[in-house]
Length: 240
Image 1 (cartoon, helix red, strand yellow):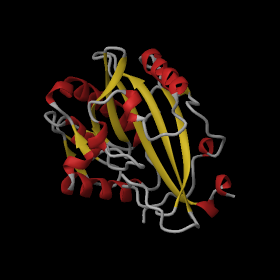
Image 2: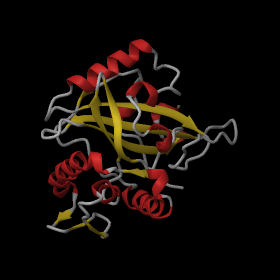
Image 3: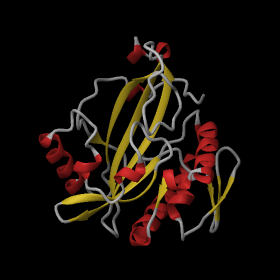
Image 4: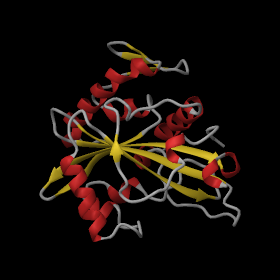
């Protein structure tokens, strides 16, 4: 069981869709008290279930490499030692950089799950991703799908919300990311839940995703990052 001590204070408020706010230019990546444990789990998932958690086709390589470069520029401020070919992480692990598989490398470095979306026609399409900690969705079912198809299981995601979200992806500016969060009750604290498991009625855990949207300056791709926090309901004001 991998838990954080508490939810970030800004994720204890009211949740609404799309509910976005400005994000600091470099604040789309964070390191918290569960970093070491989450990264061990991510490494195991990438090694044992790569087809379930990783998708990076050649067509999206340029955008994915740009994303990795953007992330590496931020990491030293978060406690990483970044070299030309390897990175030493805050938990002491050394990660070799593989520019042939940039999202795989990024998946070994950061807690965030990362989705790369590129504009095709009128909508942004999920063109690459590293998704170790899904919450009730499977990467294989969403790859190469537009935003509307990606959000099909979300009851609140009606046509109006779909239009507003597409406008957000169209309008997000380089250097001015946006962020939002969700917060749901879970019976099981497991971070990897492509299908939500309801084991009892107690629902003792709160799971919250800090989701950031940013635009890459060179390829114009949009990045959707997801930082997942799981806490015991009794340990947070949002659960009382």
